[in-house]
Amino acid sequence: MWSDYMVGFFVEKRLPFPLVKAAMARLWKIKGSYTISTDRELYYFKFNLDEDRKQVLDADPIFIAGKLFVVRQWTREVEAQKNKITSIPIWVKLMDLAKELWTDERLGYIASLIGNPL
Figure (cartoon, rainbow, N blue to C red):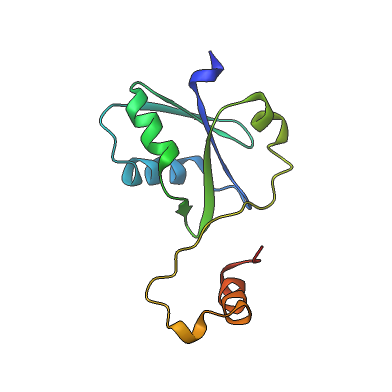
């Protein structure tokens, strides 16, 4: 049963359920419908169309009110580790970056403005 669900969580501070529900309705352009429920840490999503579920899993990172909201396929591991996740790696695509900025030092500086570069 739970293997049909996806879970969402905030890496930092959790935001209120109504805010998340409204943001998902606005951000997800899906064909079918879905249900959303929550507990103290996680938001649970169940889609009636597999293509919608796949589209959401393949989508770019979601930011709600400036907070990173991660959506993953439900697994026992996600459920067990929900309180241990404090950061998550993300890819950043820098468009039209001047070639003189293509050095380890300068790219590291630019990345540090976003977060902690790996």
